[in-house]
Length: 324
Ligand code: ADP
Ligand code: MG
Image (cartoon, rainbow, N blue to C red; front, top):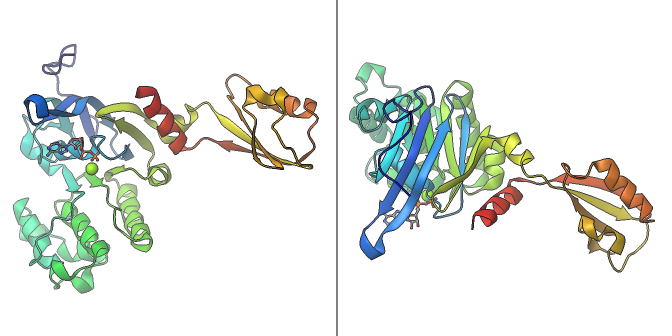
């Protein structure tokens, strides 16, 4: 598989100037020779401006590698990437200025206070003193009363919020959070999400990497699933879920069964308890009315009935299983 030059009509034009993030055939190989590890195997992605985008995948999938390439922390092997229309190779400075990354690791200088950390970061990005919003950002992440405390005295959740604050000092249009809720308790998690949602509502494009499926499902309007260095799906969240053509019917029966009815074997009838029966069907093949008729003709006494759509976890397992 060719992994270097880009061919085709996009070869000479900047990739997808209108997207918040555009990635084309991105390849990353760590190490060399027998120990070489291909962490990204030709990833192409597009994050629309203004979206709340989830990059979902298990540990080792390549999420941080992708994020770190965009942030300028890891060198890509080949492929292209642009942030807010700025190519990371030919327009590095503006690409860098357009993105704020909250890294997965809590890498804070223990002897900086939150205020110093933000001022230092603003200096790195060349934000003039008059334009700095240090107090505003500290307040937004709930660290005003810790502004003068050494980072080493902050709790894990506070450090995480300080990292978010650092990523915001240069007011980037794109905010990337790499597994921001790892090690953060539920209350702080809610607080963090409330703030990030607010930023998104005010126009910031947010990219979140996570292996928490519910988190991506609840927050993101679009989701890309990455596994073993390849994107296996990328779509709007509801469309992604709809692609999983599978529904469950759960029946509560009026009488005990000791085995699932043989006549419903093709609906993968499965007993969850003596009076609970689960059926699977594919809505594109079998209309619900047909499933109902089948249930009735099986002579079952129905006390209650509910349907369940597959969730992201099912989709994820299905996509990754299909790939593996
Ligand atoms: P994720 O963030 O999805 O958990 P990573 O991007 O951290 O995945 O890692 C992707 C793959 O690359 C993993 O197999 C990991 O072990 C490997 N990897 C990551 N960083 C390095 C590195 N600095 N050197 C060698 N291999 C690495
Ligand atoms: Mg990671």
